[in-house]
Amino acid sequence: MTIDLARARALDAEDPLRACRDRFLLPDGIIYLDGNSLGALPAATPERQRRAVEQEWGTSLIRSWNDHGWIEAPQRVGAKIAALIGAQPHEVIVADSVSVNLFKLIVAAASLTPERPTLLSEAGNFHTDLHIASGAAELVPNLGLEIAEREAIEARIGADTNLLLLTHVHFKAGFRFDMASVTARAKAAGARTLWDLSHSAGAVPLHLNRDGAELAVGCGYKYLNGGPGAPAFLYVAEHLQEQLVSPLRGWMGHAAPFAFTDDYVPAPGIARFLAGTPPILAMAALESGVDAFDGITMDAIWAKSVALFDLFASLVAETCPALACISPADAERRGSHISFRHPHAFEICQALIAEGVIGDFRAPDVVRFGLTPLYLGFEDVFRAVAIMADILDTGRWRDPRFAVRGKVT
Ligand SMILES: Cc1ncc(COP(=O)(O)O)c(C=O)c1O
Ligand SMILES: Nc1c(O)cccc1C(=O)C[C@H](N)C(=O)O
Image 1: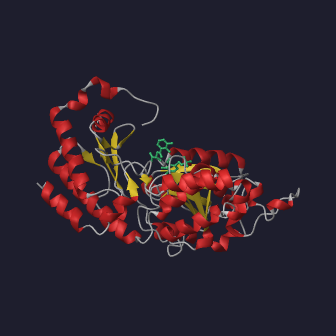
Image 2: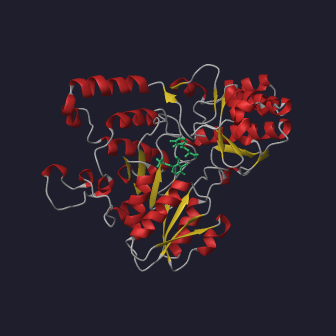
Image 3: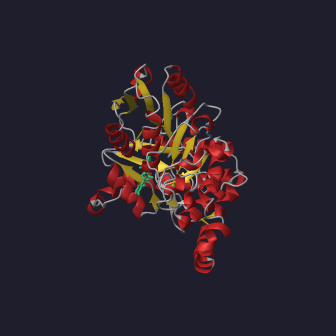
């Protein structure tokens, strides 16, 4: 056995991030391994929401746009996210959803080089990315979407490539692109790269400026713990901001929203990527999610993620021979989730949930576990794998109730 329960507890006792668990409210009896899909509830969020509702909305009413910093919330929270992803504070803004932000940046960026006809993305990318890309390609004159297999992407970049749309950490197996080298390869060919950081932000160390990234979007409700449907963020490198114009010319992205003019003049800088009124209650929840990272470095988070992953992988290899790990063994090539293939992954996932271990199923045959170092410990991993091994050994997953599929998996 890799380790026993006593050793797992000792690892937790030595863990420098152990106290961060108290920054979250987790239900008793649950091992939560789905923070890569919906982050846990930060302990500060209920009070922050109450304040936003009762004091800011209820008492201050519309005065809160000025008096409680509502109007600056997209930039303020964006600047906090920038610190987690290696960007300058004025290069990130919180707005809309990942899907909508993808649309805005694809159209805006692709329009800069209309002579280049190819929007290039990866087969098996998260489907919203491909769907949005296909819609955007239909709208931008001369642009077409081409989808290549992951291994063929870099070789496919050429003189025709306009924009490369890639998800940095793949949602299913967790494969991670080398941001610096792919971005440089695209740049050398005269193309730009748009990174989807949904499974990266708050999970892996990111250095957008250092790695030459020009465009990115990311999710607020996963590792950033912003709550269900939290607004997303977008990043545009400083040097590109004045060249891009959002196709969604909402008034909040106007240079003077309260001048009420007929003509559209984009705001200077990142604010031009806003469209409509920011969802203030959701912004408040996202801000407290991002604040849960206060005083913690992404390097410390990543070091623990690697240790949790390695423990998970070795325990499964020893005790669950029916599960095939499909996530990269090399930490430099992966994100912060671990995935396994099994023909009955769906039923195994449901059996685990019934016993308090929450991961998720990704069609057609993958069971996936998010490793969130701020609130997950080594004992959690030890117990989760022990329960999974027992479910597999006894065949408990064969219970017909575990085959019933809901709308959301
Ligand atoms: C890689 C990736 N991109 C985009 C999304 C969807 O983002 P949204 O629902 O905010 O549009 C997700 C997950 O939901 C995702 O994993
Ligand atoms: N956004 C989600 C939702 O509204 C319901 C269920 C799951 C999600 C997700 O975030 C899925 C996630 N992006 C994934 O990687 O599978």
